Image (cartoon, rainbow, N blue to C red; front, side):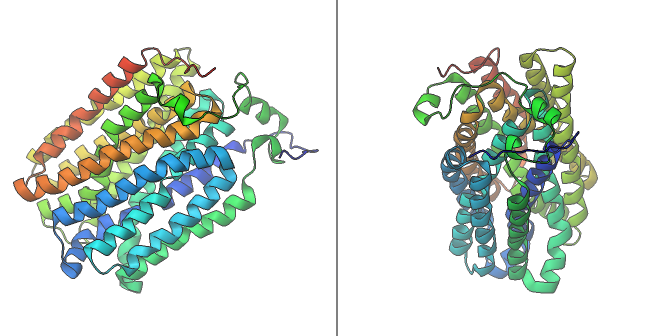
Length: 423
């Protein structure tokens, strides 16, 4: 229920404070899910598992993520962003501590399953918040900014986890990183309100936020979303490209350690540099399409040109298995990860381009579920490929070509990025 705001500031840019909250939520999510990936080789000697069994753990996370995305998107649309996001981060913070109690492959897999189930709400809630707080002309930039939290989270892991392991042990590292979500929750509950209800939002800023044409729909059931080509343009784009990002997130530390014979301390700098490079792509990708729109390019041209640039920038990563220099491999993977994040910022923004705000959370949830199904299958495939061939070459070939395939599918299903017909 709306509250009456009697006094507003003369000027404000409070929407960027909200974007900052989304950024930190994404940082926390990626720290929580990255601890196992960074400690995998270390834990392999303690717990006893191989690449195939490790793929079961990552696949468990991905499968739960797929299940959670469907309900998370719908939950966010029904409960509202403030309440839905609060419930989700409380759940995943508890789940993030659970790997600290794991004693076997099975218990690690169970812990990762519940972590994936809880964290599934992050992106549907973030995208819906952006749709509520930003006009279409700024959504790609806002999405790119909060999405860069994924890279910062991945950078924080190799910097923070060795210290936590030294002080608290590896079990304590899981508990400490998981607990950070409750700190964020306090700020979220204190700060977040809808723009029209927030006393820190000026009349001018509120007018900008609400400058797009009004939308008639209050809610959109799944049965109306599933037959739409626009839904599948987003979902299949996620199905093809999401597994590549998770390949880097879950397997890059292991790949660098195995290929260049690094220990947990030596692996810190290469992983940090690769993920740091990807931060640039997230913000740059969001900025580029927004800049094109402001210069008069059509929505279709701005989004797809940016997606094409990102897809082409990924391609050099196919050379990674043939390169024997550690830092050249880091450069190739860093460029590919930067391009993925630019791609991801624009792919997520397509949902708010093509669907009304009332449907955005559900579409992101459905599309994310399809992407996570693809990721689950790919994670299992990676484990078997590495175990049977002792090579990552086929995986990098797939990683380098997937985005052009995904863009072709998106263009085929939505040639002009027109709004989905829901009336």
